[in-house]
Image 1 (cartoon, rainbow, N blue to C red):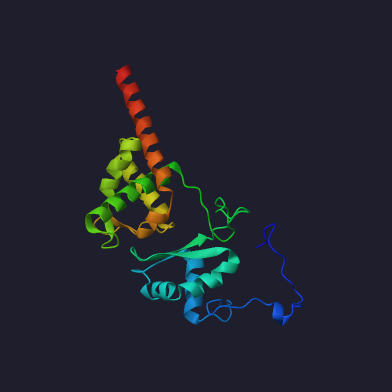
Image 2 (spheres, one colour):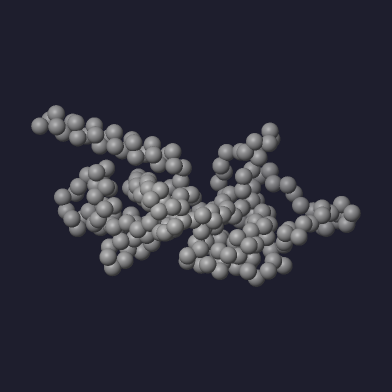
Length: 234
């Protein structure tokens, strides 16, 4: 991985005097000397991008109890670990970079953080799932229980935006494909034997909620205009 322009150069010959070396805090832990549990937590975050308490309780506990040490290991990579202890999730994020005036700079691309552009169908389903997830939390409380949803219910709402293909098999295949794709983002589980799936808590942090709401509104307006045109032609 090549370094980005503008990064401060380090002294490779180690010629700095000991008196000039910055004081290290107890949490300023180099990667090689970090405890095994800290290394395991960092590796999991770099591998998947998140740690969910219900899936990996031990690593999640390390992420919380050793948070400052995990953050210290990630800091040289310009990465950070964020905690959502209400929902039981730790996730990787690009560290906030202040600009010259000390204000937070705009988001920037990081070579270790995968940024995949979602399709319109994926974005729509994420928006619908996020709404369902937040409604579930309003009913039972944040982090109280997982939100489950039937594939049929999701498909019914999905078709109000994209229209019915007039083939049940094609419709089901379409929504199943989107759900399978979203599994790689860590926001949904496998579909179980009852044709239900779990909406996982990472969805609360996946995308800008304002952008998702605007997407739903735009699609509703587009769908309404199409329906009006069809009625007028009849």
